[in-house]
Image (cartoon, rainbow, N blue to C red):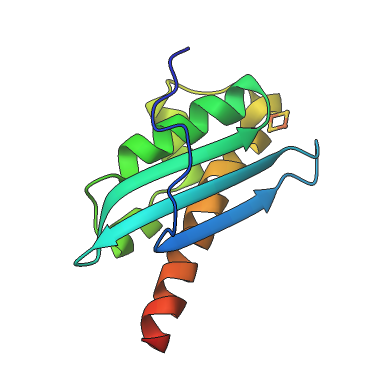
Length: 114
Ligand code: FES
């Protein structure tokens, strides 16, 4: 009910955007990384309540972790952390985990280019 870390980071170190093919909802995720640790993370979701809840939860789980540890956060971890999601809503939690891994991939590819 009180989503955390909603918003945008200007010039993020990593950016991920994913769409949910099942319902058409979209999520964008931004990360700021310092010494390979996720120092700040924000998201914008055009989606249902479950998508917003899982997005908020994943930002809470990922903040302060190294990018490699954050990559290991699974859809199931997020759903478990929320005390489970109804089965028909599990697809909504995919958005958050996928957007986070996209943002981390983006960060890593930018880092390689430097
Ligand atoms: Fe679209 Fe949940 S119904 S993300």
